[in-house]
Length: 518
Image (cartoon, rainbow, N blue to C red; front, top):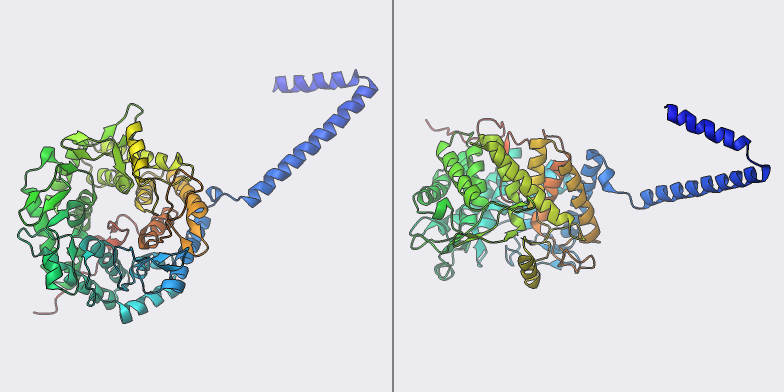
């Protein structure tokens, strides 16, 4: 304070000892300086108006923005390709490369329903329900469909909508979908095949591969368990319980579960191991049971301990990631789809309080940081499909053209869980950054599409608006900026495609089937 007054006094004395001509010069220079500062401030304000940054917005404003994004995507799909599976927003045509084939199954309609519900978009939701009532069926589908995609992205939303509304239409359609999947379980081991032909074409059925992926057949439990709970029919739950029992008794290298399994001979098909949705569903199945399934909890703890001991990698720069392990050796690559593991470790630490739970939580936070850094470091603010952690790996990923971005939800899934568990504002900031990048690089006049190379700001578009963008990515973003009471983690668990199912014993919308027979 004394220094401040001393400086002012010196300036005052110097002014009075200065000649008149010099005073005029000082005044002119002062006026010019003030004018330039005013001009600069005005220009800065204009720039803020022209390039308003959503990063500065409130949670309420962010929800409005994300809702507008949802409507932009949904209405253009409805306008140009209603009833089909996925939409090409640039050419305004059907995407026949969808996982659901050529038949009009309305996968985008089905995947979007619970997002519309959460956002309060009931007009669009009612139109979706009416289409499902009149048009949705798998009876005519004569091509192979993935049982994992059918379960997570079609059966899951039907179960979610039944839990939310109690509407019997959704339960009936859920039964219809699950009954089309059940024939896949008719194998020598009870482990289902990857694909099924819904109209039961016997020739095509016999030609299906016997090799299945644990990331797929190991991630059916939430949906099939809940369907048995709301119908009273144990066949669905029994089918997936058999998977756990068989895998628990098998030899596993260092406790790790290999990626591929032969459904005919009951053996692992390779030595490649990675973290995947099987691990995710172990935790969530225990939570879904009202935390009563102690056997599944123990399987989860053992599986995660093996992952920590044999897969988690920490670089000299303290970068944490989970690479694939081949023949017992860690690689230096990680798929973007595995960014869900950040939320898995954090939720597992919080829910189970495993031994050394703080370490597990730190691993989750570290994986979240790693995935975000891959987004932040790219010129587009979007992350590549695969991440390399050595110069050689990065070159290989680029040569294989694995630098594309396809509107994936996994990173936002982890942002949501980490935000709700930690209240660290950085996760909302990262969500805002993603919204900004989506608007700049993925938005088109008629929807959203992925890009071919996240490292090129002038990258071309892949011209595909995937159903999970509406069903998961935008839902997770919306919930990230919502209050915790909106789909609270204490009452709901999310399936692998972002659709939420009620937790037994704590959620009043569980809708357990009660037999009327004496």
